[in-house]
Amino acid sequence: MKRETDLSVLECGLTAHIRRVGDGCKIRKRLLDLGFTEGAEVCAVLGGRRRGIRAYEVCGTTIALRSADAEHVEVS
Image (tube, rainbow, N blue to C red; front, side, top):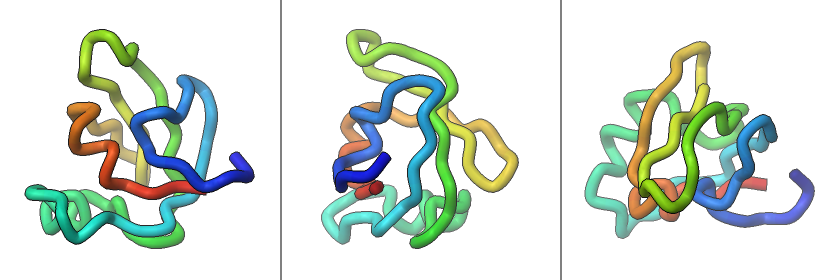
């Protein structure tokens, strides 16, 4: 991806780099602990927007996130 957006709109199969995790996110520390850190590569691997939960691969691990939490992760 070339433009900046949030992780919740990353289409399955596409890869992006994390720019930052928003300070307003309730699970910010947990996301950072799981590898959602600045510069990390993340790939959307499963799920659909209408279900509200999607899976992402980051640091060799697949992690499911609610769309509301993924919106706080800025990617480009």
